Image 1 (cartoon, rainbow, N blue to C red):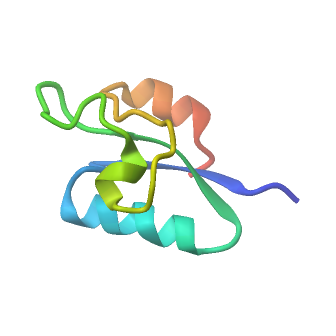
Image 2: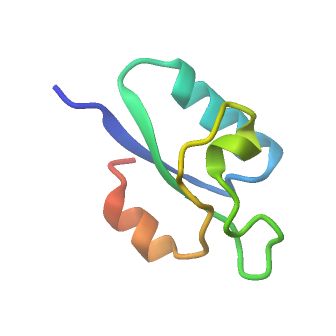
Amino acid sequence: MSDMKIGIVGCAGRMGRMLVKQVTESDGGIICGGIEPKGSPFLGQDIGSLAGVGTFGIPVTQSAESLFDSADA
């Protein structure tokens, strides 16, 4: 069975960063993206780097529609 693709809304906040870290440390799920609101200084930054868990090559975006289309949860 494949891993569940998880998207994080508000990924640059304290809770969002904690969720990114928790998903990467747990079996069965992978981070597929994260979003922040328009004008956020975190847009374009790597979601893994923001959470302190390494570089994932996944930039923070503002497109909820795109995130929801690619995520299972």
